[in-house]
Each structure stands twice: as C-alpha cells, then as structure tokens.
Image (cartoon, rainbow, N blue to C red; front, side, top):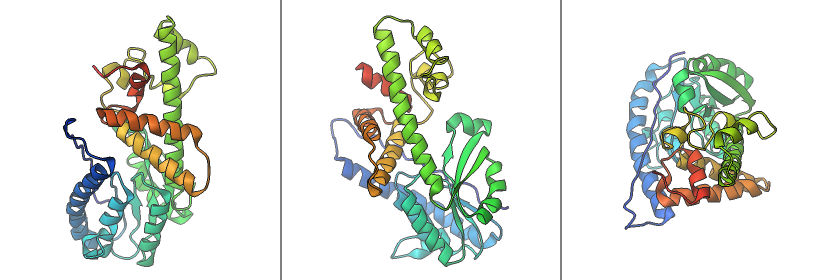
Length: 300
C-alpha cells in the first residue's frame, strides 16, 4: 500500500501563571490553533490524495475529536479543505488518533458514504515503543478492512490487534489508559508510603515486582526516582507520556462511561488528580510524575 506521510500535530501552549484563563477559554484557544495547523496539513494531503489509489493514512494527534473531523471533512463553510473531498473512492483511511468512539463511528459513516472505509487504530507503547518499532495498534475495522490495513501498520508496530468493528480500537485504548492511570497512582501511593515509613525504595520495588502487587507501572515504569534508571522518574520526568495526554484519555473514558451509565469511581478520581496536577503547571511532565503531587513536592 502507498502511504501518505503521517501528519503529527502537537501543540504546547504556555501561559504566564500571573494571567490565568478559564479551562474553557484555554481549550477553545488550543482547538482553534490546532485546527489552523490541521488545515495546513490537510491541504497538502488533499493535493496528494487524487494520486493515491491503494491506501491512505490520516494520523492526527489532537486534543479534540472535532480537529480530526476538520482534517477529514473540512468545515461546513468549505468542505473542500478536508481530505475526504479529494480521496478517490475505495481508498482505505486509517485514523491513529485517540478520540471518543462515537466520533470515530460517525466519521466512518461519512467516509463510507463516499466509498472510503475507515479504520480506527490508536497506538500504545509510548516513545520507547516508537523508537524500537514495537508499538501496539488497536484496530477497529471490518475483517476485510483489517486485512487490507494490517500490512501498513506492521511497518510501524509489532502488535496489530483486531479489536472488532470501527470504534472498538478507541474503546480498547481508553480502557487500557484508564487502567494504566489508576495503576500508576496506586504504585505511586505504595512507593511513597514505603519511603515515608523507612524502607529502601529499591527493596520495596523488588518485593512488589515479585509479589501480587506486580504491574507494568511498578516493574517497567516505576514512578519513584532511581528505582529504574531508564524510567522517566530517573530523568526528572521528562519525555514519555505526558500528564495532559493522560488527562485527555481519562476524560474520554469518563465521558464514554457516562454515555452507557457505567460507574467509574476510581477513574473519576484519577481524572481529578491529573486535572489538579495539570492545572498546577505540570502538564508536559511524564504522567508518572503524579507521585510528586501525592508527596506534596514540586519538580526539581
């Protein structure tokens, strides 16, 4: 399959602390700025789209599903600004963003109406997995579409999992990250308590990692500095998966849960903690830095 190069969009907005804005205004500003960037990228894709006959990847990393919609569909005033306006019929589309399942399903219907099947394929594995080529893609698609896009995704990742119909890739991603956030907070609490009570964090981590408390957040990504030399905790919580990205995914999980009346008591609490940590100005740190909030510390 021919692949149009990935569009990776990441906006980092720093506002002076002495001029706070409401979360609604900040979100609106970021969405507008992202949309402007997306339209520029979409224009390039739109120019190239007629040349593509066998495959297309649209990979957008926004904060809101409406930005993905803008890239694919343009605006109500000017649909020609979207990729769908120029993609030939039959070209499969792959969206590797992490957005809400309902938006993906609606966009898939719009794409199908003009003859373009759309698969959602959010990614897991972090920056380390990207560098090593071991990413996991959670794919929502029909069996026929999955067979068509799988070779493309295998060029970027190691684990290509068919989750079910369109939208189930997003379901898998937000459920995984919901559990990841909760487990990270649990490990952070346990490590902080152990250190406060006097046990060597290395000793405690070794016991946890050979006992029933073992999990990825403890044995691979431990949030306590110095326990794992290659973890973000041992390099000032730089790199990795950001607090704001985890906050976004927890928001998606909680929104989806409300739609199906599924209680998420721990998920809701996790979202509140990451919201608080982000509002204190630490949104760009790795999400394991949540341990500093629990310890009442600030990053060095």
